[in-house]
Amino acid sequence: MSKKNDIDTEFCHIPMMDGTYHDSDQEGKINRMIVLGPGSSVSSKELFNFLHVLELPLNIRITCYGANVNGLPYDVNFATSQARALDPTHIFIKIRGFPPGDPRRCRAKRGGAREGFHQLEAEYKLLPDVTYALEHPKHVSLENPKKIPLDEFIEIVEEQQDK
Image 1 (cartoon, rainbow, N blue to C red):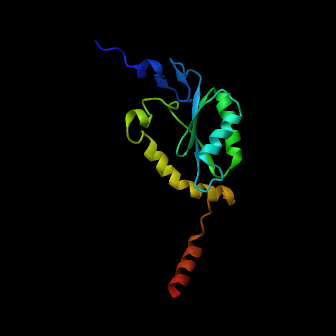
Image 2 (image 1 turned 60 degrees about the vertical axis):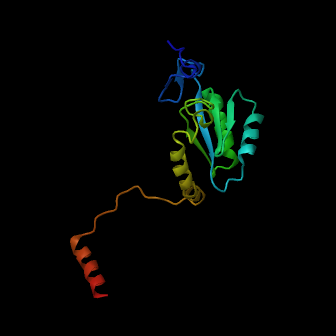
Image 3 (image 1 turned 90 degrees about the vertical axis):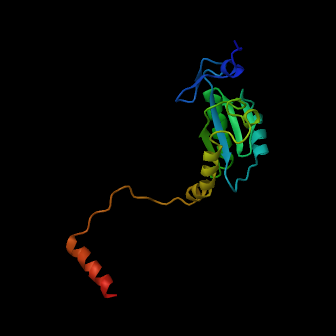
């Protein structure tokens, strides 16, 4: 019989819906991706250094899109809020299902793009629009428009047909 796979024993088995893990050394910890949007005034390296200066007990991995942060919920949430304050309209936070370096998701161990990377890539293309919306907020009415009377609608249609 073969020896049990290290992946099964070294890392968590079941990611829970709240982002924490059970039955592993990751129990009670959460993971977040810090994504630097296009036009961000902060580089991945600057973000990485900033997070280290906070001196929190976190596992931080620099990535091509920003950083992955792993640790206890209070520390991770504090670090991500501080990081986002660096450039609020260009830095985005996303839940990540696995801790940094997890061989089940790490492309260095698996080869090729990791699962979910193509989704992140598609979301990244939308970030300029999100940034624009954050920088130029507009009032949006949540009330449904009122229906116009049929007679008024007929008048509008007839006016357009006359033109």
